[in-house]
Length: 114
Image 1 (tube, one colour):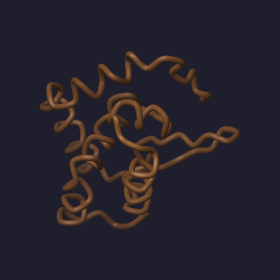
Image 2: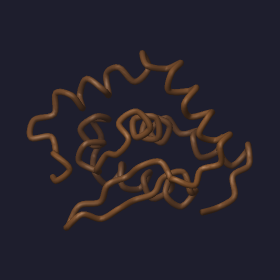
Image 3: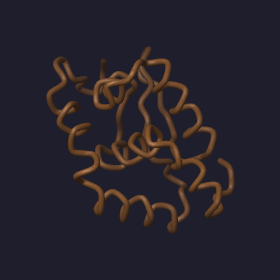
Image 4: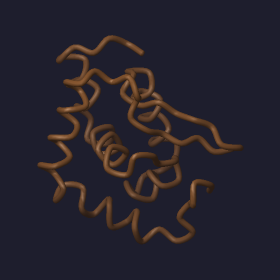
């Protein structure tokens, strides 16, 4: 995991897709690519590219379950980063509302398996 600085965190979250992914993962605790693709209404390669950047930055961690990969906030995030994400999530529920609605309406939503 890379060392977080204010500028590195801001660069990581500067892209709206990455910001939405990070906040949705923070909200849901764990999501797979197919859930994020549905929630963000984006193509899988775009979501995967942003997930790779979030993982490389150290913001997200992943775990493999069979052929599926699930993403969660990195368990070793500095407290100040976790606090910022929590504050951003609490203050921006409306900004994520459509994404959350898409996620909730997802047919065949994974039960921890796609």
